[in-house]
Amino acid sequence: SEIGRESYECIPISLGINSNHTFKKSIYTVPSYAVLLKIPKMGYDEFIVKEEQGLSLDRFKEMDYYAVEHYNLPIELMMENAGLHLAHLVALSGIASNATILVGVGNGNNGGGGLVAARRLAAWGFTVHLDIMTPLAKTLPKKQLDRAVAFGAKTEPLENPEVWIDAYLGFSQRLPLPPDLLSTLEKANARDCHRISLDIPTGFLGSVDVPYFHAHQVLSLAAPKTILFNLPPSVAVYVADLGIPKEVYSKFGVDIPPFARNTLLRLLSK
Image (cartoon, rainbow, N blue to C red; front, side, top):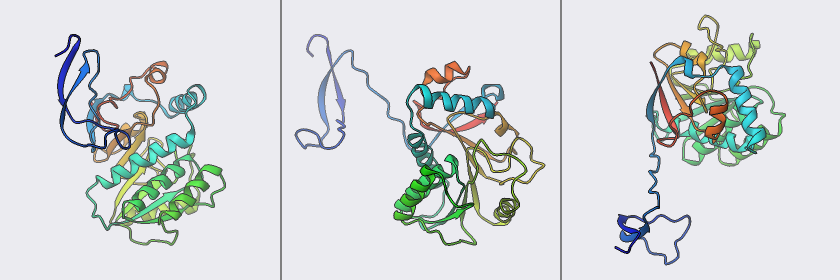
């Protein structure tokens, strides 16, 4: 080896096409100060967290808005991250490649994340239908709806989906829910299907004694929410990386989940 260098057996990775268009295993020399990165694997890892390490909904709203304002994180980018992780969780849930999926969406950013997932799942070959709770009036959800439909998501009703995704309402939801939405939740809970909620189950604000979407899996965005510890133990809760930097978590008094290990994590309560 040259002074100050070490030899490593590695597989070169390029973004796009590398300069000599060769893709073979080789011996490369790298500076001794180079860092060999561990690429997060597909699937998900598990991590243990105590309830006091989670965030209340109000505190999470503050953190979310702070990241957008001070770090120039576009909402659309975080929406794309949320939807991609949701689509991955659906694909990892053991469903068949020809499964029928119903994505319930509302007129907010949570609905926009659901539409990103719908687009991704349709692109991967799943049969995806949309249950649009109310006409979409906001710019981002409308844009995501157009994209999802262009990718093959259908707006026709689907009575008996194999997977029902709840992206109707996000962390800004208020109770009581409107009658039409309550009827939809009742229908979803009565179906023999796999149910997944994005961020927070619609209708759930910490109590299981009111009507809410009975999810089998919940994908919490960016951080564990304290109210999710009140869900039945049978519910699997996951946390997905939205791209919020470690400094923001520190400012709000919580540790960033171990996203360097994997950007999709299953929460195990302690």
